[in-house]
Image (cartoon, rainbow, N blue to C red):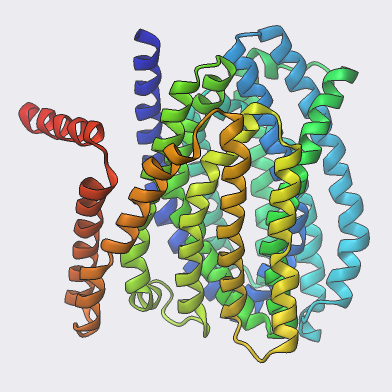
Length: 511
């Protein structure tokens, strides 16, 4: 009884720390994005987005290996096998170095050819785009090699350190933008160079912190254990298929928008995606605190607790996402005007569509964590990866054959994501011994109820009020109240309602 209580307290504490981190990051990121857009200009901002996106495409390696690192480290911690953990970490670092070299080779051959021959870049900015590309390669390599240390921090649930390190990274990026504004050189090239320097600094800090705190990260030399290396490499390879699909459709859609339209449309998508990433923090922070416990519960064969965590993570992270996305979607025009002043065409529509995609992301993440905990990912990655990769060719065919607006590619993404989520459930739930009917009843049914009912009153009021500061505040307040009430009335079961009431009562009583 003591251990689950202690774990629940740790989850609550880590969640609080991650939300404090998120508030700092949101404020810093919003201001940084505004200044970067002003410093670079819309065209250079779009060029940075699409050129850097080619290397981000190679970042599927980072995502794949991050998932493998997190799974193996967390699983070993759950088993309590420290010696095996040391072997795992040493082999993980070796694998990351190998793949960092792969990024360099692919980036300087196929990637460079694609950047110089296929992208729609103004002639006078080709040199700047080339240097942005080179710096992006080195940044991606640094990010990849630092991934095992980041995974170790999260697996050990040291969220305070994770919060401080990421806040420090955001402050450095903000400072670099002010320096960028003051220097008389090409700002697009300087911005890419500053991002590289910050990444290298982060890498050094991660190594120093982990080496002092965690025994398994104190490497005196690279380790190679052939069976273990093969196991991790095989796992990462199948994970790579799914991550390749994710980066394929995100950066693939970005490239399609550049080919069929222009860098201005890329800038609009870049702004929408920045807001999307910020909003994602509201759910991923909650899920990040639960994910290590999900894996450790599976390692300890405590399936009942795993099911409870999976349902809670899925349901409440979606409620939290709706809480943020509803007022932001309704007041997207006002928010963008205050934030950026001027912004490219299509930005409002792009933003609203990516916020819908965010809700689907909240549902998929706990399922992904669960299947990674089992280690049985081959079938899952093949089916999920194939379905997600179909987004780009379908969008390409529609853009090629029909005179459709750029918003259409986001609609293709949303439709395929819904089908993919159903496939994920059919594969993963039997593997963790969770009944589909139980999942539908405890997760999907309350989410649909809240998703349908909560926007009704705010939408009616929004359509009948003028656009000004008073209506903005009214819409935000009404939206938040509506989502909270609907989440409580239609989204919580009786036990959750009693827990919430008891918590509210204890807070009031203490005051």
